[in-house]
Image (cartoon, rainbow, N blue to C red; front, side, top):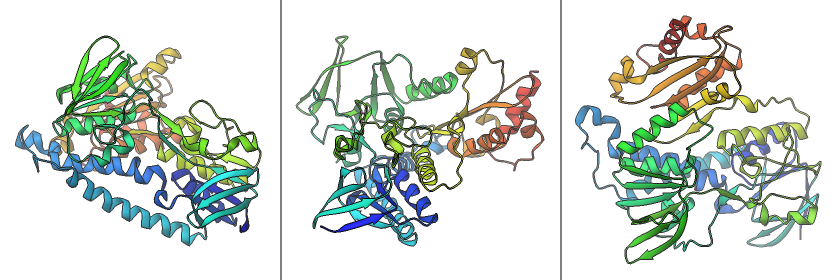
Length: 460
């Protein structure tokens, strides 16, 4: 067994692990990353963020959904979309991103160890590599081991027709009907993607309300769009039994309803991979989902061990995980870093996509904070007409006295890009007059900020 001593050892090479390792290296630290060779880049690259968002782009293009307002509701670039059509582009993007990650780690002098890590003590891990056991010592650690789909033991998963979200890219053919259990971010994203390909989707969730952290008007617009795409919502429902009968999956609900479909997708929650790290050996506890408790600096109760990314829980986004990993490394090596958890943008890559920053209307109402609203529909914009957009909206919430921006909420084309304009203005304490007085390129969707600002100011 070989002994190595590093200033920082990072367990996991996803967004949090990568950025934490690179930030530490930039501060002169000797850094190692441990992960399986097949998982360099983490779940984000191989099963989550990158594949699913690539899948979304392929579906939007091949389904022709962006051009239907011009060429009719039956228009499609390709009517019979196969799983091979979807997989080809995904593999190309994964390969390119993998090369970028390897290059970044190499240029920053970060040592890679391939295998599974298990803690021996608070400064040592054993790594089960293909070539045997390797012992690595570190002065500090960042646990960024990510998550896997949470399983339900009562469901007979078969990796073909009864699957979880990590297996969806392995579908041999596209189904005509699908049941999705879980109407959270991931479930809604996949529901919108498959419904765009004319798959009849039934979405089941035990909760009455969808996406409680999203502005209600935005959620209402998304559900209206999905219903128009033949998505059926079964809310406040629980599964009683799932069985495969001949070529169909039969789902029985506790209410007695029976739903049949070709494919069953389970999209309820994630389980952290922390249970594979032997954390009991070092006295580090987790919750029932394997999540690790950290302070504002992402430090655990063990001073030299930090955790970041999905393993620490909400919001569990690739973008926030990157910043968490970077901040953890900066705190370890006393480098300057600022983290504003109240000003994080959220992106939901449904069709249409959603993005938001700041307060929602329901939050402001609950907190008894007065506000005014300025809105614009994308169809009212020249660029919206050029692009053939039939849906989409931008909403600005602002203080009627100080005119400070309290929140920005967008649904529609490029929402996750447009949100950063609002993010910048909020971060620098801007008022709604900024949008009124700023010149935006014309015609653009960014002009929505100006039109919405004028709408809001006209209400005062």
